[in-house]
Amino acid sequence: MAWRIELTETANKQLAKLDKAEARRITIFLRERLAATDDPRNTGKALSGLLGGLWRYRVGDYRLICEIQDGVLCVLVLKIGNRREVYK
Image (cartoon, rainbow, N blue to C red):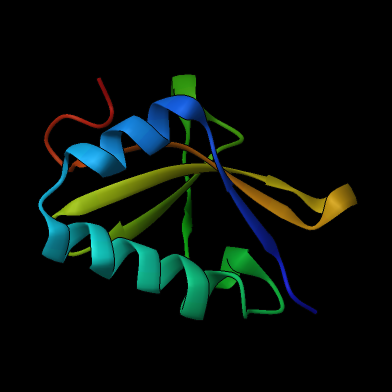
């Protein structure tokens, strides 16, 4: 079962601002690891508190904050940022 990966406009802008090597690393992660998995929850970590219901994926020093939409088999990437700043 393949999952579709979608990025919000904000996440697209954040990805474009990264240097090419990091952006490529994140893109490869999304395409080869996340989209190809049977359950994206096995790769990520559930968030709690104000971000409850969302999932975090770690790619080096960067974090991807995502919403998993089971009904349409879609992982919606909401934010991409350095681990120090992405939760603010």
